[in-house]
Image 1 (cartoon, rainbow, N blue to C red):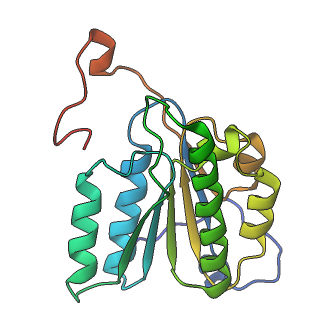
Image 2 (cartoon, helix red, strand yellow):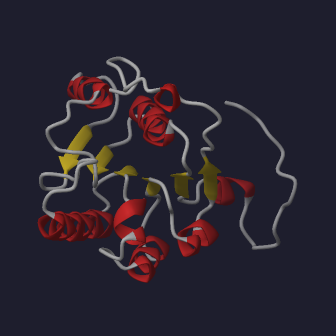
Length: 198
């Protein structure tokens, strides 16, 4: 197991083991590529540890067949590591918005399901893919999300991805990575391609 020494040890009365095993809220935000990919990498680690993993896709179209979904479903069904459940919130929202009202309702229903699963301790790792968008757009109340995350029982880790993560979420999270775009093929007119974007 990798060893590291924290730069600060808080006087919180916890042992090193207790502090190490606290549940984390993790945010991957920013304009750069790789937010979801990094979260799915964490899902692979969780699967390897035998943890049940729940992936909730809030924005990407339910019709998209992303490589990570297939890989994690196959691994989850293999009987080797943890289980993997993949949830697509309604029809999703593609980059060409069509029906915002039904997308908003799907996001709210999806968040209600996540809250039920957190209360029931259904998963050990939750990937709330593109969930920053529903909070940014006001579809889901950020304060409600923060309260649910703060009060969740057990040792459930939650990873939230998406651009424009609300500042309150960033402030409350334990780990925040801001993916910054330096350069992307789309800048020179090249569309996303198989095996790279999906």
